[in-house]
Every structure is written in structure tokens, then in C-alpha cells.
Length: 142
Image (cartoon, rainbow, N blue to C red; front, side, top):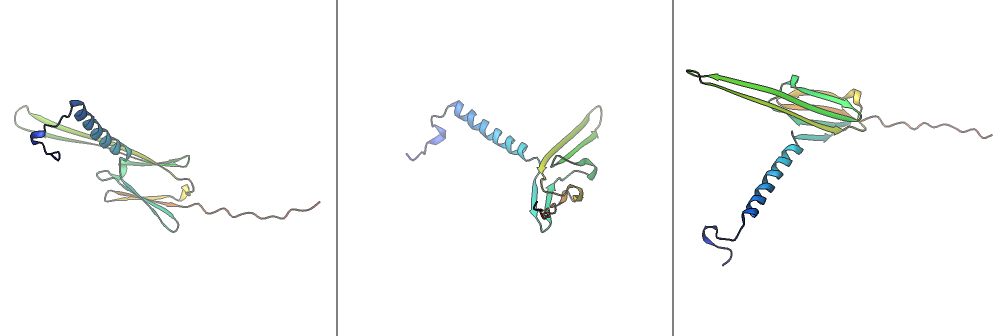
């Protein structure tokens, strides 16, 4: 009666349940691995501004590499916490994280890129390359 069955007496197999679990975990892990850190790219009058969220990182933990029209941002940190209690009990927790993300910078003047990092936000200013001025010449007729 309108799918109202008490105590989940519907005929669902264990395989349906396992498939739904697999879909839930694979979707969550794919989304997390596809975007290790959030970025906003804003178009400005002179080019673009890339804002990357990297909370918890120090400026020294972030590396920006340029090459082959690719900009790669890498952030890596380690953290260790120790707590000693009475007796022989010792608790130690370690945390390690590294992220990397690449962007195509075709049409960007690589030598003029600037970066700043404040309050967990990395800001890169990416100026466009100047449009090539067409060279005009006269052709002599022979």
C-alpha cells in the first residue's frame, strides 16, 4: 500500500545494499581526489586572478612551478602532536598532507606572474600576454 511497509520488509538483497555503499564511497572519494583544494579564477581587465584555499599551510609549505604552459601548485605539510600522561602511557598523533593541482596557462605572461599568501588564501595574478602586433610590409613587384 503506497510503499508503506513496516520495519523495512521490502525484498532488497544484500547485493543492492553493497552496491549502494560502493557508489556512495566511490563518488565521495572521486570528488575529493578530483579537487584537492578549492580555487576561484576571476577574469580581470589585464588577465586573471587565481585564488586557492590552502588553510593550515605556511608560506614555506607551498611551491609554485611553471613549465610547458602549465602552472602547478603543490602544498605539503607534516604535523606531529605528542602528549605524555602518567606512567608509561604515551599518545602521539601525526598528520601528513600533500596536495597538487595544475592549470593551463597558455596565453599568460609567465615572467609577470605574482603571488601572495595571507590567511590561508594563495592569490596569483596572471597577466595576459600582449596581443602580437601584426607586422605590415610592402612587397616589391619585379
